[in-house]
Amino acid sequence: MDFSLNEEQLAIRDTCREFAEQEIKPIAEDMDRTGAFPYQLIHKMAELGLLGLPFPEEYGGAGADFLSYCLAIEEISRGDVSVGITMEAHTSLGASPFFHYGSDEQKERFLAPLARGEQLWSFGLTEPEAGSDSGGTQTRAVLQNGFWHINGSKAFITNAGTDMTGGVTITAVTGMRPDGHKEITNIIVPKNTPGYIIGSPYKKMGWKASDTRPLTFEDCAIPEHDILGQRGDGFKQFMQTLDAGRIAIAALSVGLAQACLDEALSYAKERKQFGQPISKFQAIQFKLADMDTEIELAR
Image 1 (tube, rainbow, N blue to C red):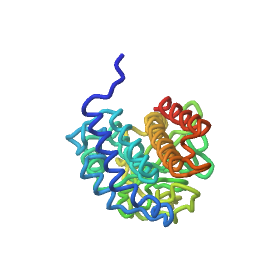
Image 2: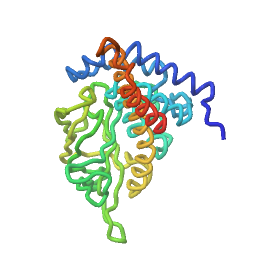
Image 3: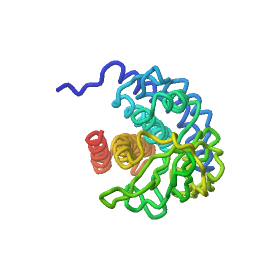
Image 4: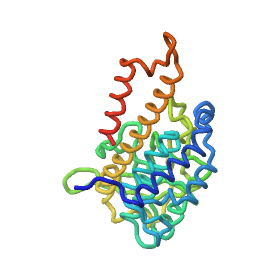
């Protein structure tokens, strides 16, 4: 089997690498220091088609394969991981559920502007007491008079409160299954919906420029038809979404590791001991070689 990258994949990788070098790295330190995300980067990434890489052109995407998307995530994250996670969470968690489970109307209404990079979108799964354990989900939605009335809270939601955010898709308990397990449904909640409260961003140790917030829902009313797929399909949908998202997160991690190696190698060439750069010492070379080997293995 030939594992070589094809011409399109190489072109996407090189484009993202050049973009990261020219547009992201020069401001990465300031982003980490201030926690401020310059969203003009998103507009520039949108112009390159990066926000809709894995989606068909008919919905504003680039029609690239999943490997190309992962290569892009790796290179963008190599420039700065806050930018990488903003892109990854938007595409893997925010936009992809619309592509895989949305109706034709929902794809036109939601996916197309997301793939074009006109908006960001978030996915609300994690709660103060629950993550991918659907049995711990406490947020509930009750169907009354054609509307889902949502009450509950979400935690650690990426891209939830930016100026570009269009909304969030949340998991909510909408009933009980015959087997006694909770019925989970994914509900689409546009920004500025009454009862949808976006909390202040978390103060984090790292990835500081990435927008991460808690969300609260207080009798938030959403039209009955604004769900993904069928009622009760939420568990299957979010598990499949997370499976693909974890691959992209692995690519992000490879990019972050490569950035660490880049910095270590640069420092080793500059730092001098006993009249020569420490990169000349075999002990340092062994460490750098081990880092490079493990990164390539992960890649």
